[in-house]
Amino acid sequence: MINEFDFLNELNEFMKEESAKQLNIQQDENNNYLINDRHQADYFINLSKQCMQDIEQIQQYIAEEKSRLLQQLEQFEQREIDSILRKKDYYDRALEDFARRELESSNKKSIKLPSGTLSIKKQQPHYDYIDETLLEWAKDFAPDLVKTTYVEPKVSIDKKELKKRIVLDDNKAYFNGYEVPGIDVTIKDDKFEVK
Image (cartoon, rainbow, N blue to C red; front, side):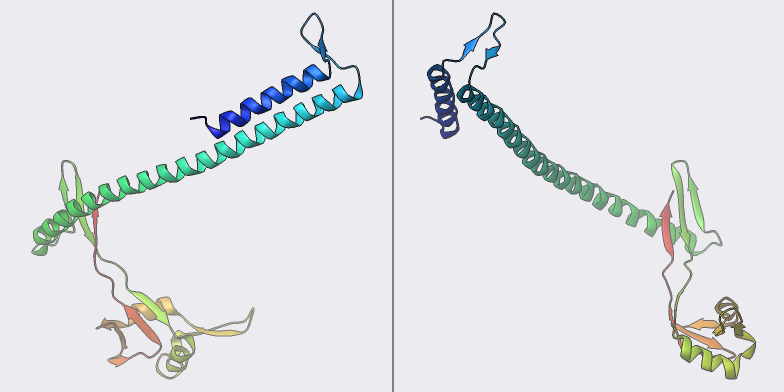
């Protein structure tokens, strides 16, 4: 069975050869074409344009193949990395369980081993502020924390100093035994690391 692409190429080549014969195109002793009239020149213009179309087709085909192959390679890469990360997570969970048991009854925060160090680090809580509510509270209960900037008149809270003075309990902030409105605290779990 004849491939349509091959058939069209053969037909195209046959028609070029027949056109060249009909136009009586000659070659010199170095096999360079000798163009002697406008019909012959027009014939070569078409050949030149066909070459550019062929180049564009090749470039388009290669670009599509590159895109397809790149997508396949990226999928393969992600699949392999995901597989390795699942193994690593499995190993790290076992190491974390071990480290928590070992460090539970000691004052140490890390375990040094020949191949690396296991550590558990305390994480800082995350604070979300409702500035207006917090400012109103501070004006009444902690006026020394209220600060005013004069470059651009603005009243705000010294949040760094506030964090030093509050006590955290059950995701709430307390100042002198009273809950501070306008602060939403998220206590983060300790972070396990393998180095």
